[in-house]
Amino acid sequence: MNHPETRGTIFLEDAEVLSHQAHPGDQYLLRIQAPECAAAARPGAFVHLKCDPQLPMRRPISIMRVDAKSGWVDLLYKAVGEGTRLLAQRRPGEHLSTLGPIGKPFEVHGERPRVLLIGGGVGMPPMVFLASSLRPAGGHTPWAPLVILGSEVPFPFQPRPSQILVPGLPPAVIAAMPLLDDWGIPNRLASLQGYPGCFDGYVTDLARHWLESLDDQARGQVEVFACGPHPMLAAVARLAREFALPCQVSLEEYMACGLGGCAGCVVQVDTPKGPAMKRVCVDGPVFDAYQVFS
Image (cartoon, rainbow, N blue to C red):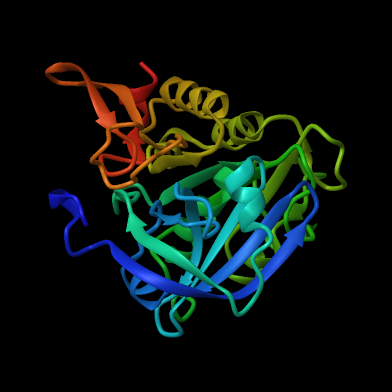
């Protein structure tokens, strides 16, 4: 069943629904018991779910959290079409056919420990997953992450004032994701909807505030990672290019097989040999931003 490039790394599991929480804006947090996927998943990977027995086509959903020991996988998604609306009806105790983990993950580099993670809308989950991999272990970590999350519908969690100071950001911007704050990871929220404590503007505007506050040495330690709508990713790529920063983006595309066989999710990227068509499912979803947004 697996494509030769991913054989042995993608697992087909009959995953039990452990919990399924509804949030404003047709957003849902789904936890499934998928131990093989949980053990193998890396930040940036996704699962391909069969949303309903009567619906043959699967849907790709980014992984937000995993617990390899307990075997669960958390997925955050927005119900926008037939498949995800049927998925939203699944209840604890039911089972979902799950393929995963799929896709090339993000790669962090030790020479750039100041990782800037930018997530928008349903692009937030990969950023949370990546942030979780950078959590302090025993209070010590070589990484200095900053997470900026944006949404134009209510966030799928209850924002709260952050307990972590972030120099270089406007003092009034204090809203944070409690989970990241509890992990000791600095983070802030942005929106154009006037939510209390959130930055009034785009995620890239808030990121610019922070980048402009750094000196040349500190800025030279920054690498940018992003996932979200295409226009947001294009803006992130422009910002990274302006500050001469390496940048990785996770693309969101409609998929059919999800295993690289149908080539239904191809995008054009620049390579040393010229433009090439790459499959988002297995060649991505993570790409060098400059190869996608030239």
